[in-house]
Image (cartoon, rainbow, N blue to C red; front, side, top):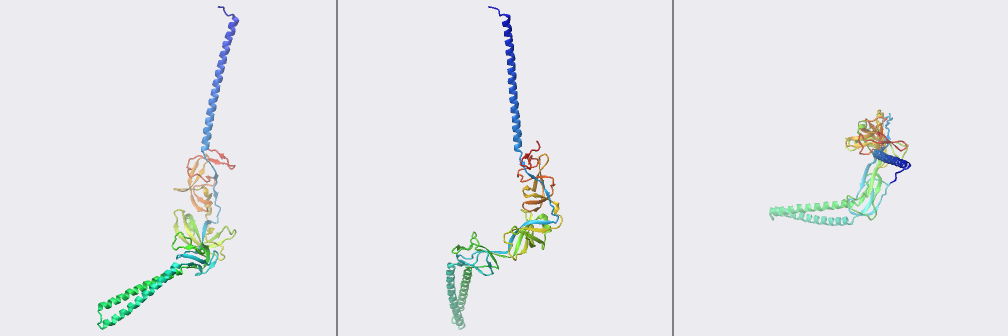
Length: 398
């Protein structure tokens, strides 16, 4: 064997050192890559968790309560306008419509014919009943003559007392049969009279379903009325007054009506009666007003805004949209968002309900942020994002 020269030994040592350093450097790079990848994955996982947590927090729109500046004490409530009298005209006998004599919008007088029905079965039944009555009358007349003859013969002792009593009894029975036959004739005559449909009072025809040739059946619960006659010279207006104001509305109190089809025009009405009881479902008292209707501007079934003057003190409440109110077993509540993004559910008292808006008292301040259209599942302590005016959510409570 030949010994390696010093130069070869030196090169070999250098190569080993270089390879060792390269290996160490590669290991450090690999460790760094693994560390960077792990950190990236951990950061992405944290970001995903944070994003999921933010997505789980609902974004809500809020409104601020407004003060009720109605110092005049006006109470405005929805009302339903009804005719002073209204009658649905049904057929009282079976038959066919021969003709109708009044249409919707026609003015009619009490007793005026509205339609004529053909009822051939009733006509035949009446003819048969009249014949039965004539037969009963003939039998009654014969029984009367016989009883009188037996009474004369009884005075002469030609017949027994028993036979005379039997003839008198037969006369009484025949008289009862004749009376029953007469009652049946009167019943069928009355039924025949129902083929003429008449208006029960002065008014206007507000509906008509009678058609020529149509079959009408008396006593059919699913049948529509052939006519509806309404007395509209004076109207009734029904209003539900919240319990909080029920003590301030009383009989004889004036009110003004406004209708959407007559902008700028008002109608005068007077409160005539009150139910005197609070409805358990609505929490309101039903009251009735009446208003004259000389030009028939008020129509049955119309919607009206009724304005009561209940005096001072109307400015003590706050106005909110009706969509902010939550109804539960504990009564009406609202969901308020704090500065930390946490929800607080607060009870309120509704003192006036105007449909789109409500007047509430207690539990709120004008600076509170009240959630509009809150979900039914919302509870105190829940975290929410408040929607910014531009439509984006602003996170709270991170």
